[in-house]
Image 1 (cartoon, rainbow, N blue to C red):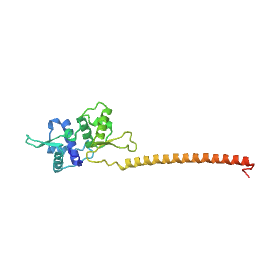
Image 2 (image 1 turned 30 degrees about the vertical axis):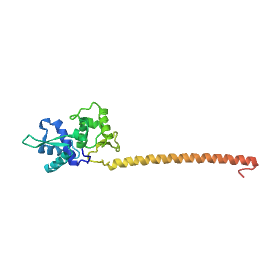
Image 3 (image 1 turned 90 degrees about the horizontal axis):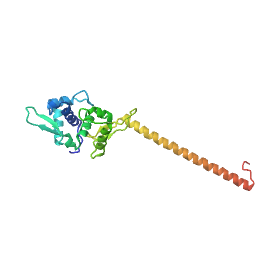
Image 4 (image 1 turned 180 degrees about the vertical axis):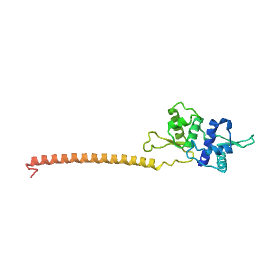
Length: 222
């Protein structure tokens, strides 16, 4: 596959084709009308889109160039199917995970396991994480683990098929604050160490003065 990022429309079209292959197999491959309806679906979509058939056709043409979508002949109505596994060079389990990330946005491993149930049934969360780690380590990287936001107990994952992920300002700010807090702690610790060192030197100097005064018979307090 060409490594150029997908447009948001291309990503939605590809993900809908994968999803509908499993959820409505009797209607798959999809007609342009069915594909457009799937792209504009309001449930289980983040963000919700409002694409025209022309928008979807343009996205299909872009995906064809990347060998990710095929046009199926032999029917009165033109239909389309996906070639995600081969086009992306990943196994079907990874396609299921990427599809949910494309359709629903960043999610935790537990959320992904739940949402991919109809596409692929993962045995446990560690199995999900194993495939995510593989996608994150391969070249080109397909997913990234996001830093935890304020109040979040688990890391979320995001896809990279449309390019680098923009970390929300709140999360980035929290991460920066944590970094600053860590730096402040290090500075405070260094200052305490320096204070202790100077106090020890002062004690040594006082002891030296007292000893010299005793040898000279001088009262150091005079």
